[in-house]
Length: 343
Image (cartoon, rainbow, N blue to C red):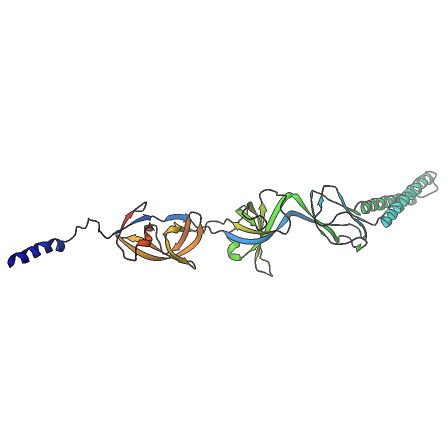
């Protein structure tokens, strides 16, 4: 009867033996780990704005008058020197003729006064007055010529008509806008508005990418050309100008652009592969790290999603080893055996 009991004890002894601390557990889950990568934290500023020509000019007549002719319409392309609009010239031509005749008369009077003064039949003062009258008439002719020349509006550069502010036969005052023209030779601008928290992270020369709904999937390179030093009192936002890198004939004033502007680095953050996340949402995520041979579930604060991973702003250190392969097979506290760059 003692023999079976002795056999039972001998069989039980191996099971009660302490396992070697160096021996891997048979139940450990093999996982792949990586070390978080330290990167500069530079969240881009995103803004939406309207495209404008870098040179948009409101053209006007120098003198008041009646609009005689408008040679272009909205959307028309114009060339340098092209005649765009003209005042009714009857009054201006009459003023020019009158100024010519008055100058001719003043020159005749001056010549007669000079002859009389030589004969001592006219005083020196009268001769000086005649000379002054001639000079005044000459200036009046120059002014009439100037008014006649600026009774026309001509394009100063190649571009496109953006607006016609008046119509034929309307009476306009001096300097009143008649036609707005954009120049396509000096490129395009995207004007956006940003908040005070964003403007302090921007600087002139910063790179940007712009996407237009009109050209889906096609990025346009740009740079920051101007940063406002004062907020708009009405909106409390700051105006930013982005200059597109190259002129594009397809662009039109008024197109809506979505800009992503590179900012100055504002510290550092850790970058981990997206595959490490087991849950994510609302700026928080969960992932596993390997600690002393076991999986530990961590809740971390996440930042921007990038092409090479996701930024972790808090809850993780550079010394941690993040599980990226096999995370779906472990639970919090599960024993693991690690391989990979962080193993």
